[in-house]
Amino acid sequence: MVSDSKEMNFLTRLFLNDSLILSLIIINSITIFSEGFSEFGEDLLFWINLIDSVVTILFLFEAIIKINHFSWRAYIDSNWNKLDFFLVVLSLPSIFLLILHSEHHGLSFLLIFRISRVFKFFRFFKFIPGIEALVSGVQRAMKASVFVLFGFFVFNFIIAILSSYLFKDISPEYFGNPLKSMYSVFKVFTIEGWYEIPDKLSTNAGNITAFLIKSYFVLVLIIGGIIGLSLVNSIFVDSMVMDNTDELERKVDVLNKKVDFLVDTINNKDKSSL
Image (cartoon, rainbow, N blue to C red; front, side):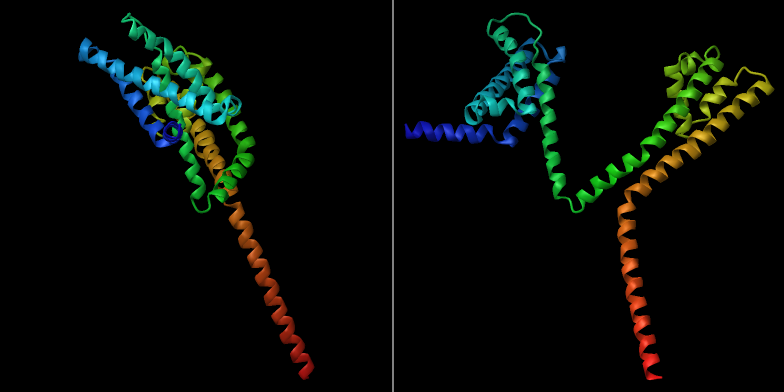
């Protein structure tokens, strides 16, 4: 009885170990990836599928042990555990079909989503010095930039619709519909390779038309790309470092008060000596 308890405790510790689960996820991902290569032959694919099924059974053991350790209510309260349990249940039919040696399309590829458990290691970010200030700065910058970003989106939306009506017949691959046009206009905003679109539009156009097309995109580039993106970047960065600026201003204020106090003290001594 004692040995069974020790064995159960060992299994519990084993399946509560994130390193083991991560290793199983990696193995499962490799096997799922390998199953897509028909060049491996039926024999090798059978063993790959067998390994995948064994890993799935281990995932099932993990769920059972965690439910036994934490209780069903505590286990299912975790969203990660809900996803794990759902994916394990979806993969169980592939195990039965493998035992029956039937042709099937395994659902175990869904277990690759378990790799999202790796995101738990983002908890290590809390050990980075100053991470709280960084997160606070990003939140503050997002709040300060939301209206500017919205205005930038509206400008992109308007220019995209206008460009779609102007150039959809000339270049449907760029401006065939408003959605394509929004993407093309945003590419112009990014400045990188912005000239490729107007150059292509003006290839078969006359001199005056080509000049107007290029002037149009130069204007869009200046307003949206140079001024617009620069404004968004400046507000975002300024908001992120605002906390540092406030701290510096407080220190300067304290220093000014000390200087004023020293000046007043010196003046009072001079007056008393007279």
